Image (tube, rainbow, N blue to C red; front, side):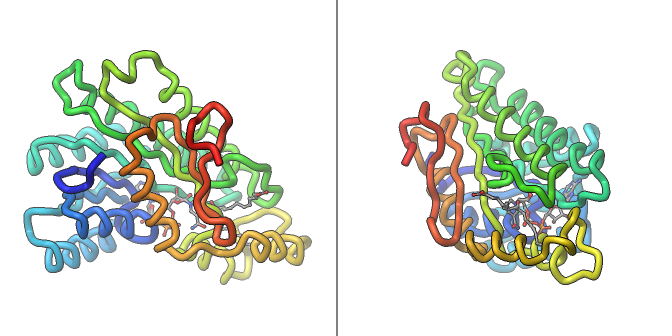
Length: 264
Ligand SMILES: NC(=O)c1ccc[n+]([C@@H]2O[C@H](COP(=O)([O-])OP(=O)(O)OC[C@H]3O[C@@H](n4cnc5c(N)ncnc54)[C@H](O)[C@@H]3O)[C@@H](O)[C@H]2O)c1
Ligand SMILES: CCCCC/C=C\C=C\[C@H](O)C/C=C\C/C=C\CCCC(=O)O
């Protein structure tokens, strides 16, 4: 899809990758509703965006993606301000192996909830404009990661859920595409907050620090810009339904899966 004129909702848009995706859309002539459970950071980001890109192009809504009512309020407010939404980015997520239920509730069920409500509003056969739903998974959604099994499980779920929607024979009737963005380690609070604490929210990290550091060193750490460039490419790709794009510092963005024409 072309970005100028696109109206997006980006969950987890207050900071990190979600903030960067949102800002890139604004720079390229899109409009964005950032949604986040963190009201302080969300409002700060909203102020920055409004100063840089104009009052009418962005808004913030508090939304906890585990809460159906918040999601309904988010969509109502976004449609009221922008008239339509044609890009849904389910990006919000956490990393906390000490809380597997919460991990699945946010990373998987939150993304499923965000996708389902987006489909209802966006599908052309129900009066929507059609568009694109991008779900942010991780390379941990495609390969085993021994120090974060619950996180990996949630992210595998996101890939399976998104690819299954993409395979639905009604996608053309809906006018919708479904794609997954799977970054490897990327330079945001999720990474720095995890590494710079005495008790990282991982399992067996201390016993295996050398191995884990070796994995990180082997893959490299993406800048936020690396991941944002892949995000833009995915949005603009006219044939993105079913795409699963990994982003690794050393190998760049790659389309995965044999059944997709963009496999590299
Ligand atoms: N940073 C990485 O190394 C990396 C790698 C691969 C995938 N990812 C994924 O990218 C996405 C963005 O992560 P990030 O690195 O920008 O992390 P981040 O911690 O900087 O940002 C995550 C944002 O999500 C918000 N959030 C958390 N729980 C929420 C909830 N219940 N409802 C609404 N918002 C909520 C947070 O408030 C925060 O603003 C996540 O899904 C993460 O799993 C990150
Ligand atoms: C000790 C530091 C770990 C901190 C992890 C912080 C955030 C990571 C979030 C990502 O979503 C996970 C990114 C990559 C997954 C790791 C390894 C995948 C291995 C892939 C492969 O085998 O090619």
